[in-house]
Image (tube, rainbow, N blue to C red; front, side):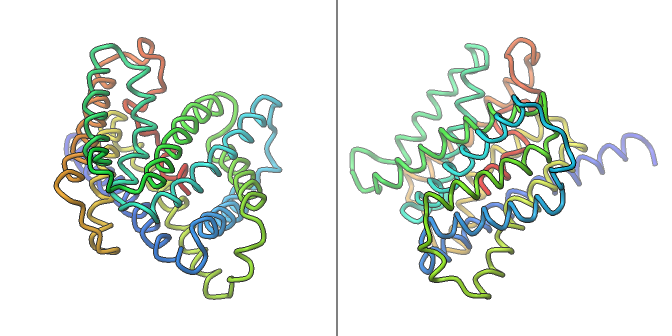
Length: 307
């Protein structure tokens, strides 16, 4: 097969894998919102993290690896940030539409990219800010303020997750880092949530929890790793910037959520800012902007971070 044809096929399959990964994430989130009526948002977050930890530990067997003290501390912090992100995002998703919650949470990685980029790329921060204003409509006061605050808290945790993942990547294999951080996240969430979800658990719910853990993070993380082998990092980052738009579609199809015109505009502006920052970073040398070579605001670990 000629190289150009082989390259084209690789790009096409990588694009499909990235798209499938984002759809898995949003389908898992939509299903989690539906399940929150029985377990509460905290209970759903706890169940997903427990299963994700069990699956990752079973596959990676972290006890066979050696960790430096610094690497282990980083993985523990990564787990605490993951717990906070998962809990706050679920709390946001049950209060505000899925597309709005995802767009607000996306401000986390977007902020990291903007702050680490050159000044020319920071104009996109204004675009994102306009998107936030359109999403929340503070002049009307109709958006649930608690949902917005939870989504912004999740965004801050996602930004911390990216920074900690970069640090962990220097010392720990990516899967091994997850194999430590996920159990830490599960334990931290268990301590925060307490025994309340146990009273509502039965075998069907446990099986549903296992399915949700596969949708987030196991399948998306695997698909993203495969996609990154076929796509340039900048192209991958551009594709991942479309996730808030995919969240709108999934939210409408699964949950019947249809954002208003202002919310549509806000999501479009956040997506545009993500694409703009990604393309800007792709034109700059990593040495100049001090970020890893993901070419944009969304790292390959994005899906796993919202497990």
